[in-house]
Amino acid sequence: MIGWTEFIAAFATFFASHAIPVRPAVKGAIMARIGARGFSLAYSALSIAVLSWLIVAAGRAPFVLLWPFSPWQIWVPLIANAVALVILALGTARPNPLSFGGARNDSFDPSNPGIVGWVRHPLLVAIGLWAGAHIVPNSDLAHVVLFATFLGFAVLGMQIIDRRKRRLLGPAWARLTQTARRVDVTPGGLVRIVIGLGLYGLVLRLHAPVIGVSPLP
Image (cartoon, rainbow, N blue to C red; front, side, top):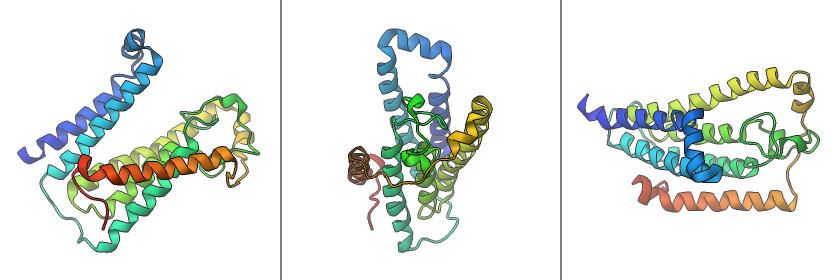
């Protein structure tokens, strides 16, 4: 049990860091000091730092192998993460009344929905791809628990948001979810794809120094 202490502590810290700062009283007090933008930046930085610790702690936990490793498994997260980051770039700060994190939702056009025409919840789909793909080559117990938790969070989150949005939007739900599926070849869409691929390159470069493991074969 002693060997699992850091992993358990990191998991507890991760959940606490996501639950406590967003409570209305806590969030309001922080925003009063550093503003809404400052809160977003600080919250994002905290989330990244704690997530990095959690992943490192999983690597330090006792090694319990669940299935054998094979070299082809490395390619699963390499490919899936490129797709995930492009989806994330295409969906961030775009009109999307069907999920969370949308911007200018009143301008959402179901006939020209962008990435929302393919996935209603870009952020959660990206998290699910990242987590699910990482399970394949990380077959020890700690990493399976880690990534399976995030995968479950993403899948459950989509279901919860769908139920909530269906209730809040009422009759508009059916109209807004009848979205067209088009490839976003607009200049803005192409720029976002390039940004997503650039983020992918940055993640590959920083993975070893930050996480301690190279993602490349």
